[in-house]
Image (cartoon, rainbow, N blue to C red):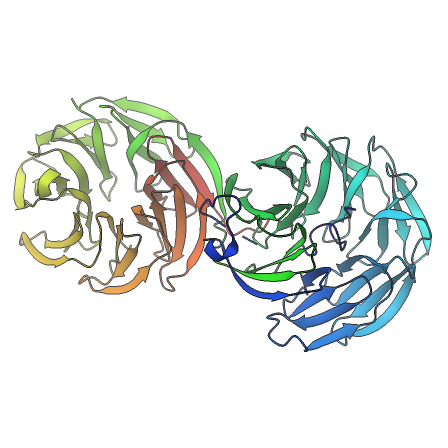
Length: 619
């Protein structure tokens, strides 16, 4: 029997998750990049965290126990007054009380979680019922009568009487869920629809459509602004509660019977014994784990989103440490063009991009991605783009060794020169007077922006110069050369240091806005954060082969794009992974923050340019 969001044998025992790296279905937790198994407990029917995250609620048909969240001492438990046949439970909105409905006793028990005492008992409807849900405000109980599964009844717990009958379903009602404030009741039905009703009057507020098969489960996001549905059509739909509009559709490999939202709005779904993790904002599926044990009967997440709890039908409770975090990235614009290189203008209004194997340069509106001008001037594919800090010019370099300096205002060529080697990277000095050009076989030189004449030839080695970056004060030029990072004095034209601590090719170098930190990303699956002298201060791991790196304008966040299409966000000071999401099918070959710090642009290996909105807003 499948029940509502708070039933023992049905679904989510608490609407409280995360994210990423695709994992083959059926992979166990022991080899998952998503989670790590931490603790287990047996003979459990269901479980959930208390709203403050300090205790674990362990459930059975006849009792409720409070246990230590780590399950370290299995004898350390507090038994709350139990009944017969636990049907559903809910926490009050303030998290102070636990409501539990017991079929055998026909009572709703109200426990004070602080004192661990039974506060009162409320009368339960005498009707036989198949689905049950309790409102967090403690006012109502919703249920599907056992003799008419196409209707839902609302019971007033205080007045001890029915107050509304919710009609209009043309199939069996499979799931019920109250919003966190108790004002909305959602239903999932076999007629392919979900419906939203007023939680007090039972008045229909809207119908949620789009599924092609029976809707099996419905659950609200923690903030109550979004509601998710899933069923047998292998899709999860996320709707905006206010507008009733479909906000996101997530494709699954199979139908889903469990859904759980994380505190930051991500979604976990489960079908049989496999758990899948999703990001409704970006529409990405991050990966799977499990698939080898008994079917799951519930999912729950700790209030801080760091722990995932599952209970299977064999009675095994498992705590998983979540290795990755939600990014809060929502796809704003997707430009389906094979962009190879791009750069933001300093005011953030313009993106200059070059497509794979194309000789032209596109000038785009950064909010829409639309092309406002196409500039011709190269006789070979353009490989590198850079803007001057003052925004007056931008530079492009091509595979035929040609470098062109463009007037940003007039959108026309101001100067050009032959760099002497296939161009792979360009960078403009902070004063906008000098352009550094890197190419094949270690070709590295400085050129005058005003005259287009060579200032200095800095080096020639066996490896390509893939990335260049001037420090904000202009006193150091960092170059990614093969497996090394070279630091140059652009005034004296002298090499200060050669850093050889990466184990594979270095693909990106970039400076923090204050110039105190140099980030270098490599195919050795690390990013090293260095001081201005090049000394490693911190190494960021748990990354795929790194293609691109960018600091946020405030210098607090580092975005990293890898070969697997993933974008990860790290805290620069802590070195901790703040979030991640899947951005592209292939490698992420470029990342850059807009000046406002709220927008991130990424490009994939020939698939698209994507503009993301970054936010900490909880859905």
